Image 1 (tube, rainbow, N blue to C red):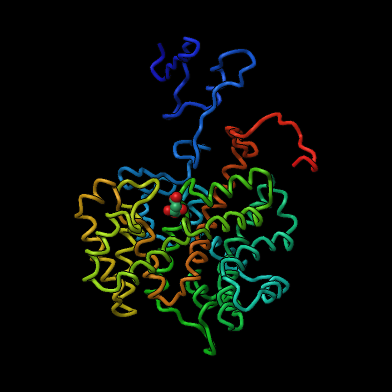
Image 2: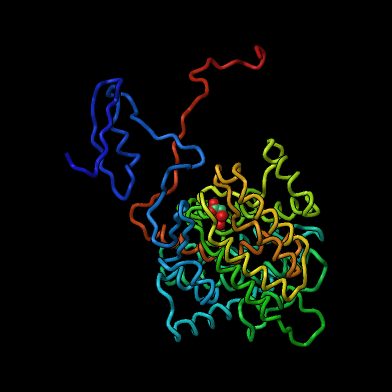
Length: 428
Ligand code: MLT
């Protein structure tokens, strides 16, 4: 008997099947042969919310949730966050290798020279109501870029794809910043190509009447690190949407807009805002034990703790915690950080949380940093969307060039009624 196989006995028929195991998986399609009769459809796997189903092969991001490991293209996230810029990491995610000096120089040049929006896109953004949520503006504007670049529909043309990828990475901070300026009623600021990627974003957000915006280098670096940490996270909800919409061969602007829409949900990109709300509710360090007790009694959740794939520390949380300390040296003392640190300390010693493997995740500290740097909570998901665009695009490319992929089409288990007699209106 071949070792790398799974033997399944169907007790309905007493038949035994031998299924190959490759890379720790069996193919769902191999289940189809398990049938009770010739007209039986065959066995399917039932997996709501994809708790244990791999939808693709990928060599972009590796996560070991049990050990708290995250790697992009094989490089530990800790090293990338410490030694790279976000655009360097974007290159790595998209092309599989770290760029050399001249590759990085031309990559940065090209992204920087795609930061401008077509004037009609700027006008499109002006059409939103004064109180439009920045994320709603971002999703709609990215979708609208599909109308500006109709050639983007040729998704099987590699050169064309790369052009759209550069445009999206370049324009995302511009759209994000304009959506913010719109929400506060400030005039839009055009990109400044002398500045680095995070500095230019800060410039477009906060420049007022000064002739040239000068970003605080510590804050700009913190933002760049946060971008690196959020760039990809394998098959999370929004990335699955990107792959799914992209599998229908929708163009990258529409696919990214769909992915960003998924990210806007409070269970995905909005989770750090929930952490801030919880810290506000706790109010002071003294209230922490009572709050923890309430959570243990089943009233409320410890926001920013636990993750679908990490059953250990989210490695991004450790890096963010260090970054938070650097940011607060610039922005000054923040009582929320103290509450967060104390909450983490107490929760990590508590059997209840240890047993449930509830450790701080990436959202636990990111919202506190964003707030300290001066971002309004409405902007948090927009901040997440900027770097995640790189991950979405890398995964989209991989999907398009994977010969095993087809249009995404899950199966269902139908539980409704069948073959009913139609009831005419007068009998209802
Ligand atoms: C992410 O980075 O996308 C979030 O942690 C959610 C996830 O991975 O499921």
